Length: 199
Image (tube, rainbow, N blue to C red; front, top):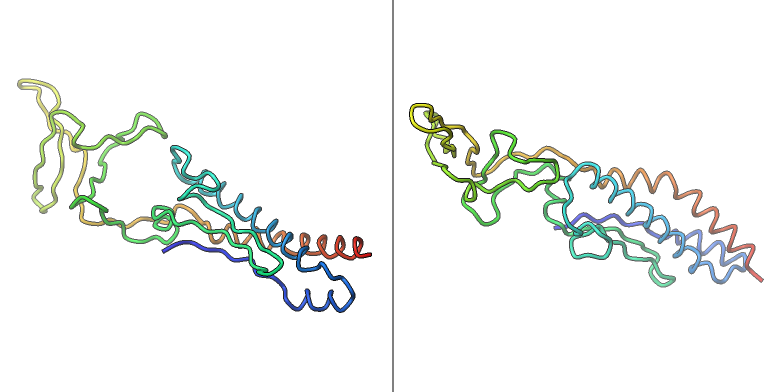
C-alpha cells in the first residue's frame, strides 16, 4: 500500500499546439508537469515535518521511505509523487494501529519523553517495572518509585492489542491544493515559452 499523487498530461492541449506547428510541445508539457509535481512534493514534505516528529533522514527526497517524485517525459506525460512509508499511510488514513512485531502496543499513560524529539523509552528499558491487570482487565505496566513505606506504583503504559489513530498528516489534500493552485500558471507559462521558442 502506498500514497500516490499523479499529475497527468493534457493530451488535447498537446494535440492542439502541435496543430499550431509547435513540435516540441510534449517536452514543455513534461517539464511543466514535473515542476508541478516538485512543488506538490515540497508541500507534502513540509506538511509531514510540521505535524510529525521526524528523526533521521528518512523523509529526505530519494530515500526508500521518503516522499519521492517521478518526472514526466515527452513519451509519458505523467509526473508522480508517492511514498511507501507504512507509518505515513497510517497517519494519513486514520487506520487502527496494530503492533508490527510484539503482541501488544505499549501506550504511554504519562509523558515519557524529555523533549519533543527524544525517543520514548521502551518498557523493557525502564527499571523497577511490573505488569499488573486492572479490575477492568487491562494490562498496565507500573514503575515502583520510592522505597520502604513511601513506595508507590506509577502507571506508565497500558497494553493494547490495537488503538485508533487520528489523522495527523494531510498529504493528499496538501498535494491536491498545491496542484490546483499552481497548475494553470505553470501550464500557461509553459505554453507561452513553447510558442516563443518555436522557430
